[in-house]
Amino acid sequence: MKRYVLALDLQDDEQLIAEYEQWHRNVSREIKQSIRDSGIQRMEIYRFANRLFMVMETTDEFSFERKAAADAANPCVQEWEKLMWKYQKPISGTKPGDKWVLMDKIFELSAFE
Picture 1 (spheres, rainbow, N blue to C red):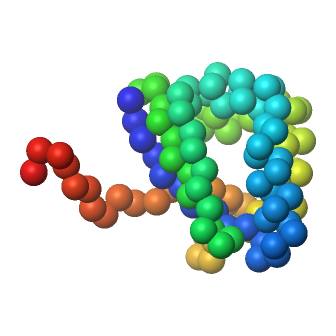
Picture 2 (spheres, rainbow, N blue to C red):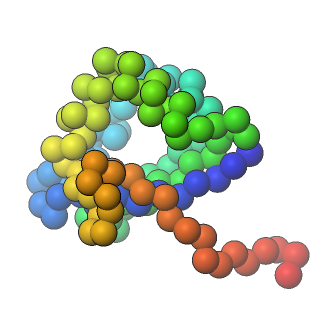
């Protein structure tokens, strides 16, 4: 199993943030299935102010490239992504077109240390 942590910002607008959270309380079965089908076994999204953090646990075979290709071919996912972009904005310093960006792990405390 692999673990990835990603970040993304939301528009700095309380009403838009509330709407974004409401959408995520009612994610459709089709979107959830597309996530599972890509090899993501667990996903959590956390928010502080307008900053989002996503934690994903995946199968060893998971690939961001394969997920992107499957998402591009899925009209339901494309509709969802278009809707979500109303609420999201790239983090400063990302490449044009980037949304969620991988974070680098810089510290880990193990139970065995």
